[in-house]
Picture (cartoon, rainbow, N blue to C red):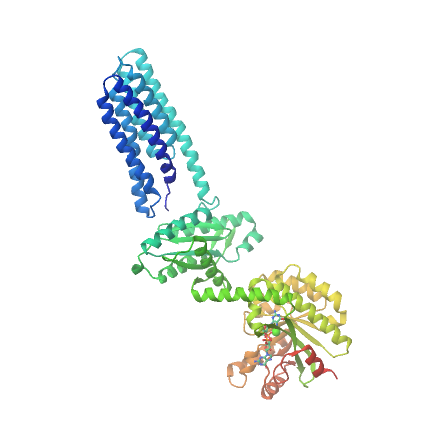
Amino acid sequence: MIRQKNYQFFKNQIILIIGLSLLPGIVLVILAWMHNMVMGALIWYVLLLATSAWGLSLYYRYDKIIDSDVLTRWYTEIKAYFYLNFSLWTVLFLMYAGEVESKLHYIVIFTQLGTSVVASALLVTDRKIFVPVLLVILLPLSGYFFMIDTWYGYVLSLFTIVFLGILFYASNNTYKLIQKNDYQAKHDMLTKLYNRRYFLSYLETVILRLEKSKKVAYLLLIDLDHFKTINDSLGHDIGDKVLQSVARRIEKFAEETHVIARFGGDEFTLLSLEHNSNEYSIEDSYEVAEMLLEILKKPYRIGKHRLYLTASIGIKEITGVSMDANQFIKEADIAMYEAKHIGRDGVILFSDTLSQRVQLEHDTEQKLYFAVQDKDIELYYQPLFNEKKVMIGCEVLVRWKSGEGYIAPDVFIPIAEKTGLIVGLGYFILEESFQTLKEWHIKGMLIQHFSVNISVKQLLDNTFADRVEILCDTYLSQNVREKVFFEVTESVLAEDVGKIISTMNKIKALGIRFSMDDFGTGYSSLSHLREIPIDELKIDKSFVTHLMESNMDQTMVPAILSIAKLFKLTVVAEGVENKKQFDYLVSQGCNIFQGYYFNKALSKRDFLSSYTT
Ligand code: C2E
Ligand code: CA
């Protein structure tokens, strides 16, 4: 890791030290002149002036430094400047310590003591500087007292050593305190990695360097997948230990080649070394990220627990582009979220295409927000039929009438799900559709089966079951509720299944049933089907579409039907577009049919006029 010294602090001391050298220095020159021994003092003062000019140049050079090698050289130089400046005071002391008659020896003894106090106070942030400087100042003074060769000379010599000891002790304590504060300001206390604030400031300096050097570096943003589950189920102590183990693994893997920080929560960042662009390709960063994923995936043994974790990583390249650290982090973050979105446990590199897509999604999200408010969301109803081709119900399908025409739900529902807007939109759809069902029921329409699509994000909303109950109480009597089916997709099985099942059971207690939508395309396994409380399967339209062409799909449909039989579930076939498909599905024992063979989704008015007798 890169150790940062308190360079800025030293820079600030330079002016003070120059002032505290030149002003008393000139007084001493005057005193020497008054006692006819000015020559030595003058030469000494010229040397002090030259040293101060060097100090001043170091002061001005500091702000222009962006390269870490140059900064290291600057630090070496400033050390030399301090040694030289304080040694000059010892030279002055040695020059005039013998001037007993003129009493100048009192003056230089005092200045030597004063200088030692100045040095210990102003150079305290670096032990490598104040220790030698104090020795150079006080050891000659102690030697001088010793050489007086009288009892008070020995006592003064001893007192000087004690004084030196006290200065060491005090400076050292302050030094340790400063180091501790400095460490705490830059590090995350849990993992001992750098913290967000320090990482950002470090990244700023790297960006400035890269702008000049035309080299490249890359940024990895790592976010652990489902870490919250560990915290929630096993407690924060275990969560903290997991974070520490993760930090140690990242450190072991990348300490030599990256600056590593914990960005907060379960998020970590790595900044690579700076590379010449011809020695480096983005594939390298990809490889590093993939290796890191593998390392993080190995089981964690925390107390009696054996835990498994995955992570999602976003990569952002840093080239000579003028952007601030936060923008680079934001782009790495976009890539990381994309990795999460496409199934977690993966690596995504930030690109302009990704950025444009995110922007588009963002715009759609904004518009969708107002669409819900302005009631530009309309519900359409696609009829469902039994094997005798009698209309028995419908599926509610949402439409968005935007300024640019109708936007398909396939486009905006995933965005609404990603951004959380689906929860509010979902309630709107539920309320509207329950109202419709109530109206149709009052009109005497024979609706036996009324399906509404429900997103997994809605099921994960803690208030969902309660709000559905309120809507049921407001609009639907008990016998009408029993017509309602909530269609969920197999994606529910990828989430917190326990929570989802409990919400589903609460809703089932109201009389509403569940249907597994797009069956056969997702994650379902037979054991899952037994676990989750569904009453119906919907054969995905992709199987129906290719029914007559593909042997594979011909075997899928009977397989799904026999699974349904096994679990006593009704089956709806969606996407039925022609008679051949319909006849085949009837022959296989399918119960309910939906598709363009009968009708597409209709507006409320069209549905009413088409299906009221
Ligand atoms: P889905 O639930 O699988 O809905 C069936 C989709 O297939 C509908 O498209 C419907 O118009 C279309 N479809 C019906 N019959 C046929 C056919 O014979 N051939 C073909 N090619 N397509 C047919 P739509 O309305 O564009 O909806 C697309 C998806 O958007 C739905 O797929 C559903 O996942 C989602 N969606 C629609 N409305 C809602 C809603 O209110 N809430 C939620 N969460 N999702 C919805
Ligand atoms: Ca559906």
